[in-house]
Amino acid sequence: MIDDLNLQFGIDKKIAFTLGNGDLPKAILLAEDATAEIYLHGAHVSSFHRHGWGEMLWMSDESNFRTDRPIRGGVPICWPWFGQPQPELPQHGFARTSQWEVIETKAHADPSLEIALRLTDSEATRQLWPHPFELTMRVIVGRDLTMQLSCLNTGEEPLDAEAALHTYFHVQDIDAVRVAGLDGRSYIDKLDAMQGKPQAGELTIDREVDRIYLETPDAVTIHDGAERRIEIQKSGSLSTVVWNPWIDKSAAMADFPNDGYRTMVCVETTNAADDVRTIQPGEVHTITQSCRCEPATGPADPAEAIL
Ligand SMILES: O=P(O)(O)OC[C@H]1O[C@@H](O)[C@H](O)[C@@H](O)[C@@H]1O
Image (cartoon, rainbow, N blue to C red; front, side):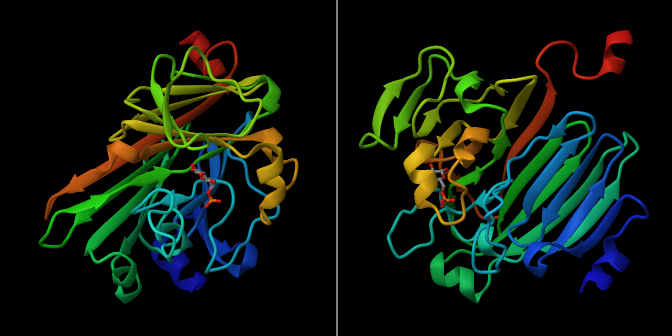
């Protein structure tokens, strides 16, 4: 399988396929400005390392790497639902535990690299969710990490889908983290009977946080507690989830280190809660997020200072 992937989609010195953890196949993208890794299991981006500025994503070193489990960390794709609408359904949908197929790789002149993966309905997905669909995940690796998740409704009935690019960002020190861009928005507090509450100012984290922010079309910025800030631009999404499990929940999760909550925060570009999307037959809905990691002060790139 790896040989076939390299033959069909490998690009010399830029894109290669290999077996990753748990012998699951993954793509390695070696762009001029960054290196990224994407597992075919879940179309899961597990690493984005912008050269000179370190790893942007947080990965659990206790993660499962099994075909029947989601990977913990990186960017799980929650689809076609967010959370667990019914107890018998898998939390966050089936996309993150499905095997995706690679459909395209490209080396752009700018000089980013791109990989596209696809998931279509099958007997197994129709048992959980009775809709035909074609889901495409495009990952573009350059100075930014851009992810586009597109759902084409290939059926004859409208379908309703939620989605999340459930991104685990690596931060230096949770006590000093600030999340900007949500001021004045209201959020659903999943830890307080789904009550609606207003956000005043920047968000800081000193306890478990699990919130769905509504009416959030704009960029969100994470100040990571040290020298970095991460800006998340988005489109096709009017909701944003912020999650940190804090002490007790970290300890309760078997695939999460007890102190993991100190160096991560999830800021998720979503279609969740009242932002569920109805997609008509033959139509496509795309949710996009583009993440840029830059020094906390100064221009994004030393070259930009002299341009
Ligand atoms: O453990 P999971 O299924 O990956 O979910 C992690 C978290 O994901 C967040 O997006 C949810 O809002 C939380 O409620 C949930 O606990």
